[in-house]
Length: 593
Image (cartoon, rainbow, N blue to C red; front, side, top):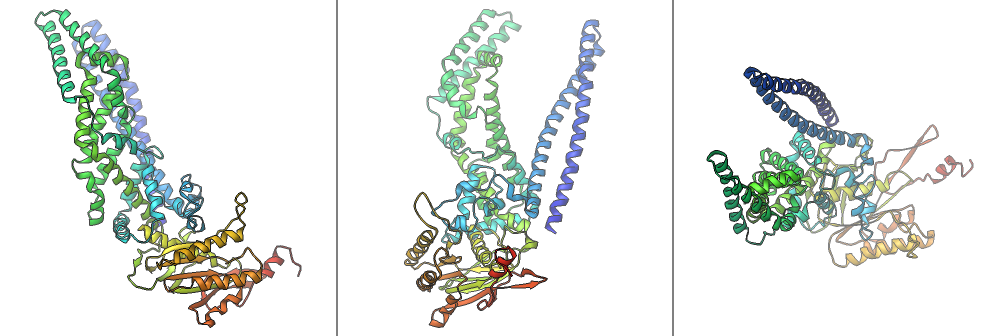
């Protein structure tokens, strides 16, 4: 159903793009016809002194101006339509699996000292971040990365994000529109340095310079009017013009430095203005979203202030034209007026600019988190339990990074203690652990999770799944795993709730030492404040529950049809009774029948 929705949106957007292209072709044709007719009417009417033709030329000139403005407006609409189409295609890529080739995968945010980043595929190729990311700005991407690595100790913020994300889920078309507005920004756009600079007021007597600029520019204009209509001397006008130009040159370096932040930002500021206008008219009136958008409405409305700043940026950009610079400063002391207005804007509004940009960064995070609900038929917002013992209860849990139709839902009813999972190779043990771990990460971020129901107590997630050696550091795979488990034991001494996920414990050593070490590690990690899940091929570890420890067993199994090994990827209670290693060895031709 959801895929069909986005396919329908895509088809409608493609139809709109075609209509806009046809309209653009008609406008180009009309401009091509009107312009030479206008020139012919004006030139012939002037040469032949025919008022009717001059009037016709004026009408055609006005028509040409209207066509130019409509063409510019249409081009802006076409750019937005293309961005809208790209965003819609991005949603469809979440259904087809093509999202794994998207360039923004968050690999730069992964940290070696944070094992879940790699073990749970939070960052990097085919990662949770890559699936979710709807952020175009650097600040938005940073915030999303922080959300996906958040500790479970800030549930107030998590619940606010849940509520705000739920509002976005009720408006899928608005979500596409907001993403498309953001997609018009440059990739990785970062204005934090600009926001910091805008917050600092300009110094150097801005009111005095503004007043001087006003007096001299009025004097120059009045002298020109006096010379043109009252018989005054043009020498006076020329002297005022030259004097104004000299004044502007005296302040040139200072003005150039102070107006530099606006030199190339007219386009970006205009785009942010459109983003904030979309947010202001959006039907998002819940308490959580209202709190997110609050900075846009105080102390001044962001759209109004940005419109003024955009106009100023365009005026500043006009200074780059040499002829305009000479005329505008000689007549009006343009630079001093631009500086004066910029100083006034920074004093009145500059401090609020950083807050506006943070609003959009947070909205980008919410759009990213909402992607789970927009693209998955089965999803729910997790419930955080207020209980002493750690709990994790899931019904129909699935991994986000696997297509929904290919994923197998599984349940979990876990409390403090250890779950030892056995099963054949490729049967789903590791995927099960990652499913629970990734959904916990989504839960703490404030996103919906891929499950019919999901409830958990806040727990720090510790993992030992994807272990590799470090040749440069002289660390073997086995020793690397030892270091991971040592960190778990160190943190466990704090008595804080933990979710511990260990895949094929101590796989890097011989079977005898592995079993001895695994028994000792499980003894140390079976705690009243921890849920520990361990996968293993060593059936000897299944007997730990008989020693009076809170250890239970579960397994995955396989079956065979027509000499083919098949899996249902469903977790079952109890220990596994079968293995498939020898069968796989024979399939690979390593072992004879």
